[in-house]
Image (cartoon, rainbow, N blue to C red; front, side, top):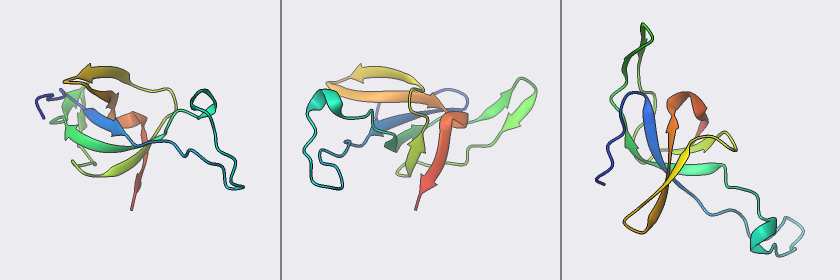
Length: 94
């Protein structure tokens, strides 16, 4: 990975959204919700931001749930990534 996030930012690769509902209905591409589950591929160093020390609580390889419309989407080497602040991560999936 050649993308190195700064500060309290994290680079994510979104996991694919479900293509069928629980009842078995197949969803077309436009009807799928934006995926909220992602895998962390790079983590910034943390540091002091606005006078507060930010400790990174996530690590590369963690699967997380993020806010629905958070972050900045970027395309790098043909892959799509999302860069978010650590505070936009809602939970770690264990």
